[in-house]
Length: 403
Ligand SMILES: *[C@@H]1O[C@H](CO)[C@@H](O)[C@H](O)[C@H]1NC(C)=O
Ligand SMILES: *[C@@H]1O[C@H](CO)[C@@H](O)[C@H](O)[C@H]1NC(C)=O
Image (tube, rainbow, N blue to C red; front, side, top):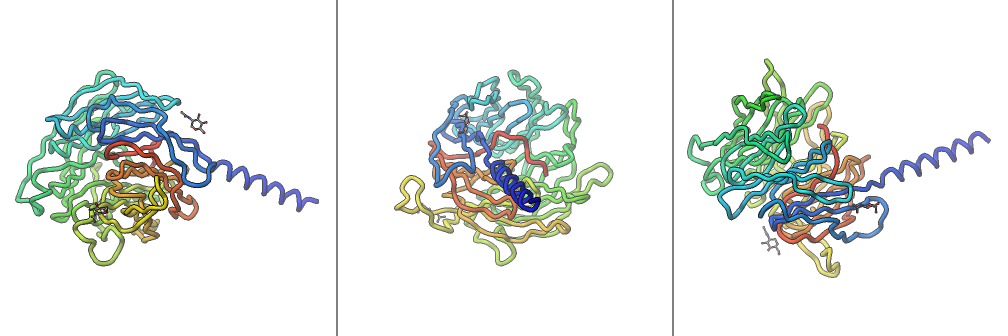
């Protein structure tokens, strides 16, 4: 009965595949209220919305943790402290462990107001940091995580009158990103309407400035994500003040990086501009590189059951889910779903592509959103954790997702 045997075989492999979807995972969460919390959530094994308790809590990242950068290969977690009530910030290194604990290895003070960092250079021995509050970009030699050394500080100055005098009172570098070739650093600057560009010596880490990319005045560039599609590379910039997504084709003429804008659409996709009261925040590529997900704040666009008290409701801002057209790099709106509460400042996706961890800054909560890797569609909430203070980031304990 060969037919039957084949059928059984395919049933077995289907079950095995379904089993593989279950993924155990630690997630590190930063809160402005001094803490870095480790959560543990295994997707695919539970029904209903699981309430998670912390596996571990560290208070060693100084006062106002604003961002986490993981070097998974070396089991090092960099925690950036914005120092909201101090003249400077701090940079802390932790050793991660399979039990979820974080052991502080080193700490240094930094220029004011750091909000984002990225590992770069040979053997990942550099860390580049964007300082929103301090109008600066710094680089660090992190080859010895117990002894972090400042390599370079670049201070920015406004070159003309700001378009939005309230928010663009000064340069506000908002993110540090490495391009897919690993050779260039990019720094979107909310205050200057620029993306600063640098090449660097991978050994000495020394930066060389490249002519920055000008963004439409008043846009307020915030975060950027790359995608590589065959021989083409695209970059997607989200602008916090203009609430737009700007698409760039990325080329490397004469060994330099060049970004050429080829579309600019409102944060919810083609159509009328979004209200200026909205504030786009994060942009994340799916692991299969076929989808781009954007979070937006201050919309109160939907109402969802309160996680702690499901008979009540809470307002929620959205996640906006796009499919990336592989040939053109254009974005096609797939769906808009509730982010799980107010002010989804940052979120991450896991390597399996079946789970998002969303940090809700104004709700003191991290929620986990189910995702179908086959269709790219975001589903319902599967877990959450209440964490004191304003949540600033949530990152999975995994290798970086390759663009
Ligand atoms: C995380 O959860 C999984 C599945 O329940 C468990 O096997 C593992 O020991 C947990 N890890 C930690 C650090 O709690
Ligand atoms: C969203 O709703 C909350 C709670 O009702 C309210 O405090 C907040 O001001 C609202 N925000 C906006 C931008 O409407």
